[in-house]
Length: 324
Image (tube, rainbow, N blue to C red; front, side):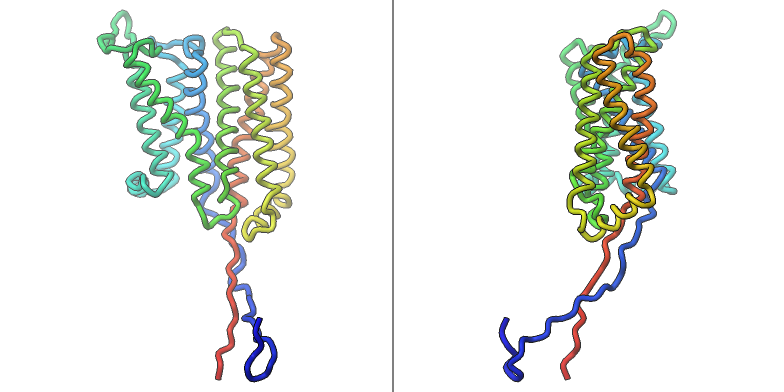
């Protein structure tokens, strides 16, 4: 640092002063947490049941796979909830028209592609009495033909985007420091896969289909990775402006709910139950139902608390005294 030419003393640096404190966001809350949860479960049960080829054992209604119908219904409810929470449908349409810059737009397009192609995939199986009006289509609901596998593949890719895009929506919100991390989409994806796995397990129980140990181990693995992702996020960059305020609010206002319900009851406990179920086959049906309740509760509250502790970082500036 060079000295002042007149006084010989080092020049005085501008003093940094706070201009505006960190501000808690209020726009994203209960409706968005519900929307994120529904999209994760809806896309996840289609993805997992198809990849593990379990859809036949999860029930058939009117010739259509029940798990696919449940998936479409959950996605549809989530989409309607999003439109309703925006207040005006035109806001949703404007959001959809920005796929180059918005993950909300890309996600909405993926929702549409998923429902349309997934619906088309199972349509040939529709049976009304003795009639099958769409049996002439050159594929079947089980994707046993080449064209059917192509349609299923695109629908699976869209389902994967449906699962992960909620976290990417938050990660691109650069103004909210707590959200601006790859840990957020990672958490949401792993949570969605865990909730979807145990949902499929309960559907197997309802249809008297045996639950395999692989599903239990997958559930335990998803929850273990989720636990690691959450702990990594809340223990790194803890002094970053905006995130520091978010963590303080998380640990004080919501500390009991976060550590007690999200972490212990909603993540660690179902992970342990999944391991027990993998080792003890007779316990899988009962533990599956219990684990479903725990993971849905933990997954929803994880999303809700992530939204409720989001802060816009404080604004500061340099105080300069004009020369005379």
